[in-house]
Length: 401
Image 1 (tube, one colour):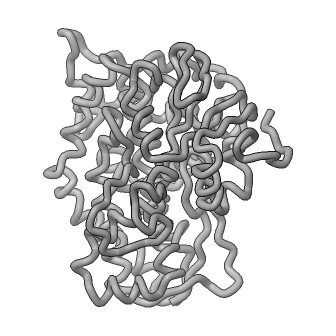
Image 2 (image 1 turned 90 degrees about the horizontal axis):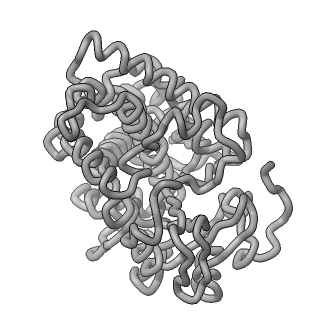
């Protein structure tokens, strides 16, 4: 059962689903870095929370002590019946795998997110963004999260998987159920069942009628001289669907939120479009959406903290990207930041395989928006809502222009 009591101390009793944490985690991270850079909680079956750049990257690189077999920030209360470990014995590789499984499954994905393939998706993405804008620009207002940001990645990923983008709203619902509603076990179960059930059917269809898509490509692959297990293919495709949607729409939404609330930055980007590449990296740094988890493999002491085998450690990439020891003016958005070693896409061997695609989608989404809506702001009295936990980003973002 989810724990709802008030947080007694962010250092010893944190809750990443607490409304205060979701609304403004930045000040909490700042305080923790100064007083307790590795926080601990007994909530949600216990976890450690890393808040500095050095600690986050160190744990990300130590795959022996900190395993990727448990990546969810919120531990599920129970495994969904019919969709537990036996249904996905490989997890969702490569993100939930350690070497050697991680190594060769990641290699299978990389060609599908190469610069060349991503470039081939850019015209479609730009046309999609403009089509979305066509649908609301005459109204002078839109929920920029629901009506724009959330509509882009799901359709691009559908193209990669070779599934119809007419099911975009269905896919979006499933992904939100899995990642966003951490305190609703039924939603998580139904979202997971929806994704796995649909992809299982698609794998069967592709076996009979191959196409030029990721599912068909995986069905044609071999490892150690044998075809890939369908359950492995299912896990990889589920990862692409889940990770490729929520993370990117959250980055797009957070960027639009920033521009809606910082008109000087918006005006500068419109006046100096050559700043866009560095600005995109800065938005990724300042509003990194993803926190990932690792599980301790053996009793160890890290930075003076006694961690037991089975403990969960949260790699707080967003907090790492706001560490003032690494980034000057860490809590400011500096559009022309020259040196930006952010870890929005992770660090180490699990660095996001789809980073090229995410960058392209974010760049095109912002570029298309500013070309047609160069001035906009939050709607007066608007209620901006945020999702948190695994992925932070705006879920309601009413703007006027």
